Length: 202
Ligand code: GTP
Ligand code: MG
Image (cartoon, rainbow, N blue to C red; front, side):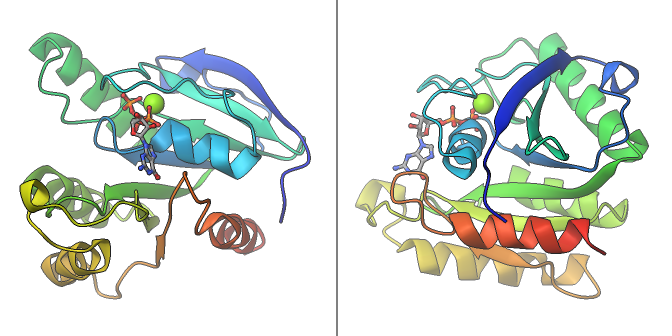
């Protein structure tokens, strides 16, 4: 399931403009700054294939990266970026949700949740929206390398992960699969790639 080749293909704003070669794809979605672009780079073992920034709101389009010439990883803009103009936020929300509902080659959505901070309402709302719309989803907890900090609620990543799972239990008939990751230590990298390989072969 390892990545031997990865290349950026294109940025799109509308679902209709995404690549039309029919290859299966997986989208990385989550709050702005949760680590979507970092996870993508970790998966493909490249430092700067997807652009990363300390400032939220870095990724602004639907970015397609072709992997091993046979499937795509898709980097999306984050939701919940409070400092972006409202108009822009509504726009991102609209085109990502349109993409989830209409992209026929989308095999699975990987919803990234920051495990270094307490559960955020907006993440619960997003998980609930994906559940209600029956978008096939895997939960990816990010930043699991970070130690607990008083200012971040004083809980370990494992405890935040457990809290999140308890809170979304009501949204799904069967609990979505979940993986703990870190783009710093590459924890969970093989597990994510293996899971994607399994989903492609269904
Ligand atoms: P947007 O494109 O703005 O939506 O953000 P994003 O979700 O793509 O996040 P990005 O990958 O740009 O990372 C945001 C910040 O979090 C950067 O400063 C990263 O270095 C940091 N970061 C990402 N993943 C990890 C991780 O696993 N551990 C730690 N400690 N920091 C991380
Ligand atoms: Mg990004």
